[in-house]
Length: 307
Image (tube, rainbow, N blue to C red):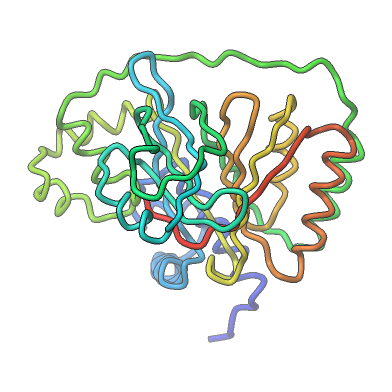
């Protein structure tokens, strides 16, 4: 059997990963049909992508509701590594990370928390309501091609009257079983379903009905990193902007998946950047500020995270 060229294999990886946000529970047979590859090939590729951490997710993020809100917290603690371990025990924390930079801790919480009461608390750099989480469609690209596209997109931007569309906010109506399902599948929707249902003691019929509600209550995200996530520097940018749609569209051109969180008049952008592209990436961000697409930007580097 002829060896598949690396570029073609990476493109196949992208096609597989690209299907998972829309079809997170899809069976491998059906996934193979959608990407027009043999079932065994798809199964082998997925195992390799997960084992090498080229593929993360699909995972879920809750939308804001009239009776449910999450908050973005950027904090400083005297001992962030110790606090990172301590925060794993907090049920109200949906995601957290230890970082190095303008802040050393990121925490997404489902209620406002008095972090100043925790040991070693130093400061709150930013706190705001989490309004949305965005990841773009997964497409194959190279760093050179992506950066050229980003430059071109920037050249098309001129400041205009900002628009802030109001999203539809619904009420959260899940019961105990639905919350059990969310907590069981939120970080990894590709788990074997029946063992999970037995573990949390939820019937399959309840699971099937719960799946139908996900588009109303959640956004679903799949991340793809061609070289494996650990080979990139993981930057977290807090960007003040009146043009969040433009900011999202620029970062969407990267060959690695950006995760963009909208919060007030800021966006929090997580991007994985290769060492060879770091200088050019910083230059792009400077150009965004020079063209007045963004107002201010601060950043940190993510060392470890936990969802």
